[in-house]
Image (cartoon, rainbow, N blue to C red; front, side, top):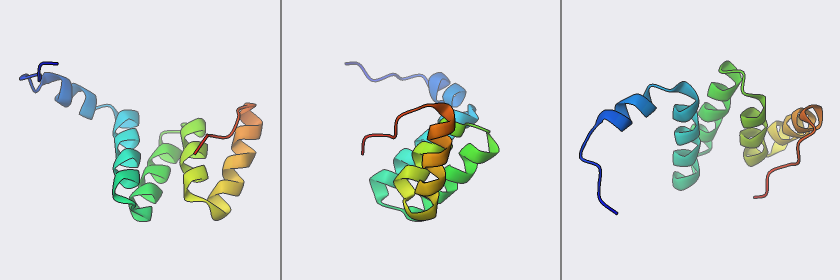
Length: 82
């Protein structure tokens, strides 16, 4: 697969706040950083993305997972597979 030489897609995607939060969560998981995961959780809360808040909270565990379960129930969604 050829590597894209243009920086256009990166600039466009990077300006999309939900995508930035998803990438932050991915970076948190890749680096095993609870701080970054909490930052992603906060970003999803600010963006009012309840499913992503729940998904990230589920990964955090503890009280955040309990809140995630409540959100998922309200959304009638299944918990994420981890």
